[in-house]
Length: 441
Image (cartoon, rainbow, N blue to C red):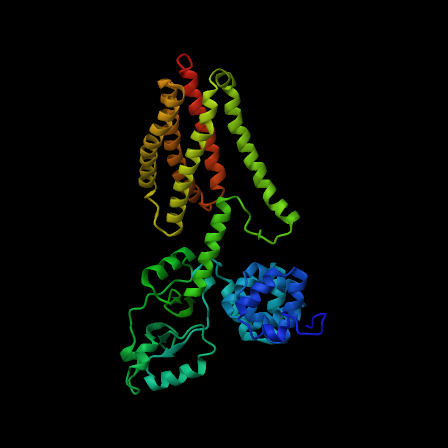
C-alpha cells in the first residue's frame, strides 16, 4: 500500500509480514472491520494472514474470515495450526463451517479430517484444546535415529520439548525430554531411557481441570489419550493460558453485567443494545429496594437521622458480599470447592460476616451515638450493620454455590443478585429497627 505522498504506508503488507504476528493482530483489531478485512486479504497474498489470525481472539478472527471470499478464507484456515483453526471454526455458523470444510477437503483432505475430528470435542475440554501436531516415536529405535527424525519434523510439531513413545497401535508407552535424548548414548534404544509414568489427560476433561493439572505438575505440555491409551494429541501451556485468560475475562464481565461481545471500540449503538437490558434489570432491583424505603416513609420523616445511615449499611453489605462472591467463585473455578464442601464454606462466610459486622458495626454505632448523643440510635445502626454483614456473607456464598448446583455459571449476574439482597434487606433492617425503637429515637 502506498500513502498519499508516494511513500510506503505503515500498513504495507510486505513490511507487516516482517513483524511479529501479535503486532499485526493488534493492528487488525484496531482497524474498522472493512479495512481490517481488506488488509487481511493483502496479508493473505504474502502468506502472513494465518499467523496473524492465530494471535487474535477467535471471535474476532471469525468475523474477519466471514468478510473474505470462501476460497481465501479456506486457504488461510488451511495454513493455521489445527487447534487455532478449530477455535475460529467454532465461532462461525454451522453452515459456513461445513462449506469451508468442504472446500478444504479438495485443498487438503488430511487437514480437513483433522479439523472435523477436533470439532467433535467441546471447546472447553482437553480434546477441544489439543493439537494433533506432536512428536511420537516407536519404542525400539535408537537415540541417534530419534534425533534424526526430530530434525525432520521439528517445523511441523506444536512443541518438541517432549517426545512421546508409542507402540505399533499408537498407544502411549512413555515420554522423553530433549535433555534425555541429548545426554544418552546414540546406540541406546529409547525404550530404555523413556519415562513410563506419564501424566495424561482424557479428551473429555474440562478446561478447568486441565488448568489445575498444569498448575500442579508444572509441565509445558500434556498428552491426551483415549480410553484405550492411544495418543490423540497434546495440550500445551499456551493453549490453556489462552483459555484461562478468556474464562477469567468472561467471569469478570459477567460479575459486572457486561456482555462478553463488547470491546472498547464497539460502536455506541451496539454497546447501547448490549448494556441497556442489564441496566433495566438493575433498575427493577433498585425499585424493589426503594419500595422498602417507601414502606417506612413515615419513620424516615420522623427520624431523619436514619436516612444518613442507609447508604452506609447497604454499601458495606454490598462490599462485603462481593468479597465473598469473588473468593467463592474463584475457588469453584480452580476446583478448590468440590461438591460436599458447600456447607462448610457457607458456615465460614456467615461467621466472617458476624465478626466483620461486630467490628464495623461498633464503629458505625459509635459514630451514630457521637453525632446525636442517643445510645438507641447507635444501637440501631450497630444491629443493622451487623445483620446486613451476616446476610452479605450468607448470600455472597450461596449465589455461586447455588448457581453451580443448578448447572449455571457461578459468575452469572452475581452482582445483581447480591446487591438486591444487601440493599433491600439492609434498608429493611435499619428502618425496621428504627420503627421498633421509634419511641426512644
